[in-house]
Length: 178
Image (cartoon, rainbow, N blue to C red; front, side, top):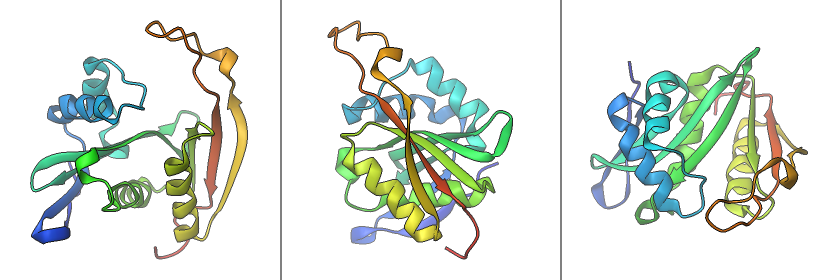
């Protein structure tokens, strides 16, 4: 069951933002890997995500081609909170506000009154994305410490530590016509 919204894009392209289907799993994995900055999970994890969290995640298709995705879920024990886990937009499709359009779609469908996400301090694009959501929703955005560097194991590939992930909260959501 996928809600789709076709929206004109640049140069006559068609943008469709819809909930996930299991067949999207491989595209999610490729998009995440293609960013060069996201923690990439196994292809199996993205297949499970597309199956189990389809209603709180979306994929953006530009002329039928996977261009981006957002994965999210309602927090167990707190169904009023939507946690956004990953946001990815293929480099060929950046600059078209796909991330903000996908985020607005997920938030509107979720019915959540609050959003949480984690962002590293150096990720200005994600901070701007969620700050823009707060502005558009007439909501407050707050930052607090959550996962420090010490909680992450060193990278098996580089030996480097993972940067701290700060918790950003946007609340209240869905209180106005946005």
